[in-house]
Amino acid sequence: MNEVSLVRLYVLRTMYFIVVVGLGLYLWPEVIADHRHWELMQGMASCMIAAFSLLCVVGLRYPLQMLPVLLWEIVWKTLWLFIVPLPQWLSGHVEDALKPSIFSVSLVALVYVAIPWRYVFAHYV
View 1 (cartoon, one colour):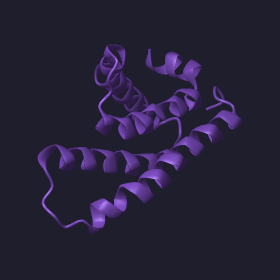
View 2 (cartoon, rainbow, N blue to C red):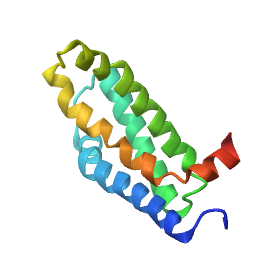
View 3 (tube, rainbow, N blue to C red):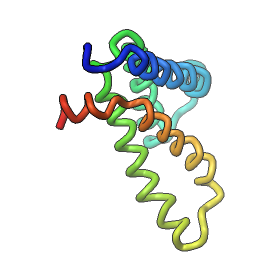
């Protein structure tokens, strides 16, 4: 654990906290209180993101051990940005329905900043 500075650990914990609070306010009320029948993909995505938020709670206590969770977030969000909205933007027309998602997914840039990349390369690459 001496490989990552205390400041960097608190930056990581802050990132986990932002995810927990953000999804706690945005997603969990929908998951808990919504008793309607969900479409297949909406239900799957909501449950997957809810599980992600629960794992981020564990990350508050064990920030380095839960790094793979943040790496998973980086990978799927970056892939989505390159595969879905980027081609539309390059063609000159982005669907209006995508714009809110583009903004929220692009916040992954904060995760890129929070990750202790030297530690990641030393332990996972």
